[in-house]
Image (cartoon, rainbow over all chains, first blue to last red; front, side):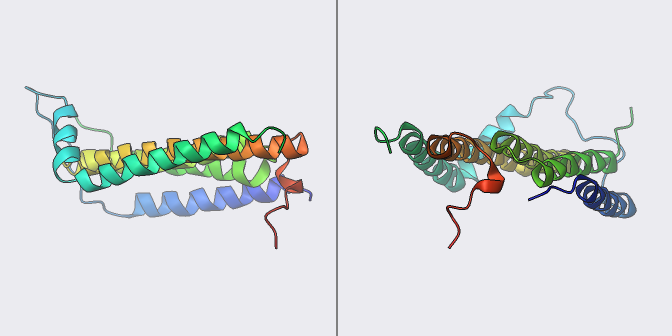
Length: 83
Length: 102
C-alpha cells in the first residue's frame, strides 16, 4: 500500500489548525500569574498525599495493570523455544 | 513576573500531537509507530500538567503520573508483540501484517 505523505501532512496541518484555533479562541478561566508558594515551591509532598489518600484505589489498580503487562510482555518476548 | 499564557502550552501540545499523528500515518516501522504514540501520549500529559498548574490543584499532575505508568506498560507490551512478529516474519513491516484479520 502506497503511503500518501502530502495527504498525511495536509491532514495533520488541518488538525493542528483546528486545535490551535480552538485553544486560542477559548477564554480559559485562568490567572495571569501562576499560584505558587515561595516558602515551599515543591509539589512532591502534595502529589504523594493525593496518591495515597484520594487516588489510592487507582494506584492499586495501576500496580495490578503493571504486573499484568510485565507478565504478558515477558511471556510474549521470551517465546517457547522455536514457536 | 507574568506567567506564560495557558494557550501557548495548549498550542505546543497540539503541535506535538500532530507530529505524532503524522508519524503514525506515514511510517511503516513498528518501533517508529510506538515512538510516535509515545509522543501523542506525552502531549496529552503536557495538557494535563498545564491545566493542573494553572488551576492550583494537583489532580492533573497525579493523573499525568498514572498516564506515564500506563504508557510504560503499553510500550512494554508493544515491544513484546513486535518481538513475536519479528520471530515470525524476520522483519517488522506493518503493511504486510495481516495475521489479526478475520
